[in-house]
View 1: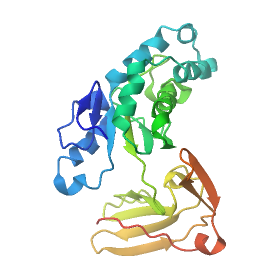
View 2: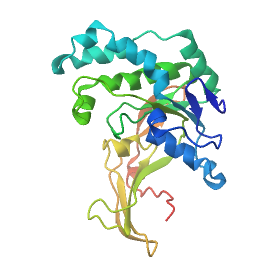
View 3: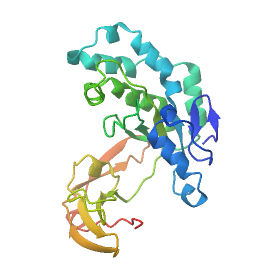
Length: 262
């Protein structure tokens, strides 16, 4: 993974202070801030931020297109297709390949125009180095999805876009932690939802995950609910993409415990 800045790409891991958040999005800025602390840096997978300026050429191409000028609520899919299949310069591909090294990646969406847009943009998992640009195209294309327009109350003018590309972690189990209990708003309780394999199935609700409620003050589990985790998702061993596998009845009924710092 290339360290430092290369034409609108910013390393997450070189310990430098992040550029303005509006350039790279809140997710990337937060990760770069973590990497300024030596104790926390080792917990952040290698990666880089793809800034708003990098995507500007792609954005301008869509804005100048006939598809954009004719866009309405009813034909938003045409815009997304235009964004995903647009022309990239050779320098774009070279930058991404040079920064990618020999790793597998997850491409995630960045912030737009000061709003979080959490969960609205597309995320690509298990992306091989040769397909980083294609994956970014897919993430970028989701800017023009109807739900983004509705969320941002921006009509049909697309928002600015940035993204994060990170080394793919292949966990045997994963989970999502809430630092306050979302069920009762108790700040002294933490909720952890977990399952086998990648955390994607926990996030999108496609399986019934385990749920653990912790007392943060006493560091004890207050409630345990074991879900029926019939399937798990893992990175394809052949390289690229994610596969869904059946979980045995025995494993489905086991509790999936993940370590969370209290």
